[in-house]
Length: 582
Image (cartoon, rainbow, N blue to C red):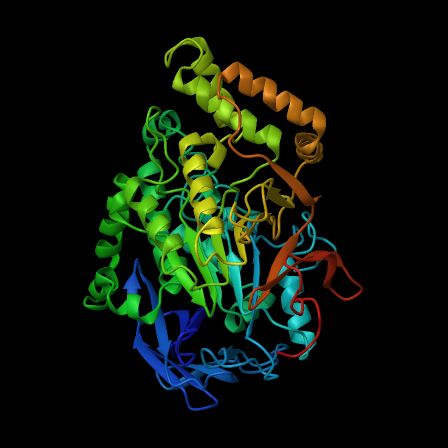
């Protein structure tokens, strides 16, 4: 009998027709996978194979707009989800938005969109092997806590989408259980040691992450959007040309990067796409046309690793009057020291065109990038300083200062937007154009993670144009980790980086690096917060509010505690933390 190996994972819910969704599954053998909904909606797909594993992305059609319906997964006419026996979670459901343009469920305004987001989830269970929030060395998992809240309280408001902004798996920091699985396959004394080496070992990471019972149920019932960050491949992936040259000289890197992109395409990227994009995807068509799609996926991944212009991992999602642009800030980089760019030319054009398209068509623009645009000011200046040294501002590109800059860049993770100064300026100008242009949205929010703490930052500047027209409120919203930790010295360092003394030190570094005065200044309006956490944007018409929760140990499991809540516009919609039913 065919078994469900992983999933179901609810991915795309269409906000245009409010009648279509996609559900991803992994099975243990070839089969026909079906999703059958209680309201009669359904979809089916034959699985495709990659490296001995079998997957399907089922497009469900016929859903009722503005409804919530339970669904089951059927493999070769046998129901495998919900699982038989004692299953402690409510039925998995698909919730569709109201018909586009219609009033909300109370008939008194536009539909509310709730966007929860975070990054950096190290999925390994505690050392004792039990999913106990009390024995977890990095504290309770925020996704586990969110799942527990939603499962226990039918009236709790669910996010309309969960954005996972990078480090969904840690290829370079494996758990004890995963290391045992790797040791059964090969000698861990040989490179890359206890890190994952190939596609099959990547599947172990997704098993560990998505089989967590709470997370498995959560992902089955809350739609998700994903993008990779460095640990999905390796720490500080694509930091610089020198970094890339060094790692390409190893015996194991080619297999790692190819397998990392292969697994990302299968487990994460496909679910980001709309049904129309899936139907037009030539690689997906190719793997469905053959009993074994391994070589097709491998060839695509190898090409993308060699030439970033061969693949686009960035994508757009529309949620009513909310536009999300999820940006690849890892694989799309140009690393030549004299032409460094966070995004290559085609990728940058895609972002610009998408952000400026159809003025007035959205009330809120969300730019998802795993790496923060606005950092603590001292860190920003340090990154620009190291970039200037590497570029040769002090003693030329082959001088001693250039070597110092590269050493610090690699050792201190100085590789965010600020470390690509021209890209930082172009992104800043793009955001300014959107915020001050005709038909500007109410807010432009850059959503990020990576830095293992959370904060809210806001550029200094006018609230109206010279003609008196209000400009969009621009915010950097950074939230991580979902489940990880940060050493105490780094906590102190980030606090110092926001301080007046830290700003002064940063300006001294900028002066030494001859980076010039900053084109933009910003200030912190919330945080820094440290812990396992999630932020939620609640958007309704041109109203917006932000809240943040942290996972805490409770009597019977992890609980979410609200630590921040604030309207972002003059009047805020109901927040995610309120327990009014959707």
